Amino acid sequence: MDKIINLNTFRHSIKVKVRFHEVDMMSVVNNAIYFTYFEDARVKYLQDLKAKYKLDEVMSNDSFFIMAHNEIDYLIPAQFDDDLIVHTKIEWIKNTSFGFKHIILNEKTGATIAIGGGVFVHIKLSTKEKQDLPESLIMAIQNFESEAQKI
Image 1 (cartoon, one colour):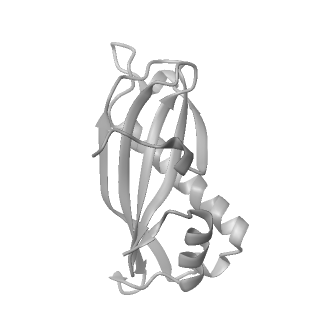
Image 2: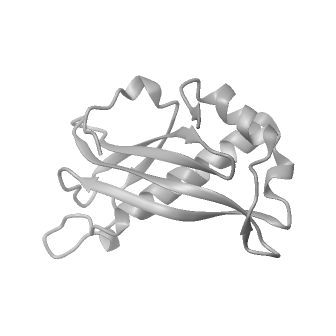
């Protein structure tokens, strides 16, 4: 995963406060917790996208997204009580999936804590099979993320 990231290409972010139960005996954030930060950011991103573009049909009773891949590079540890910013974007879109990219920064110092990403796959719940992304979702992502590439 490349380490040079242009923050100007990230149009969505959330703030996170490192809580006591997220750190280990050395007072640094446990490695698995970063995936929770990514998940919180993805959920908020999709909620905001859904509200902005009125995508009620995207999350129907038989339509769902599953996480197919998750990755992270840990650069420096976050510590108890740090204020973090998790920047999130969708980098690419395929027929049945799309890829997120995340970067976590220390809000006070601006230091890059971790960089990661993941792949969401759109499935039909009743069959557990992949299904094409709704065109309305693709259009919404491309409108919001001017650099998201359809591949």
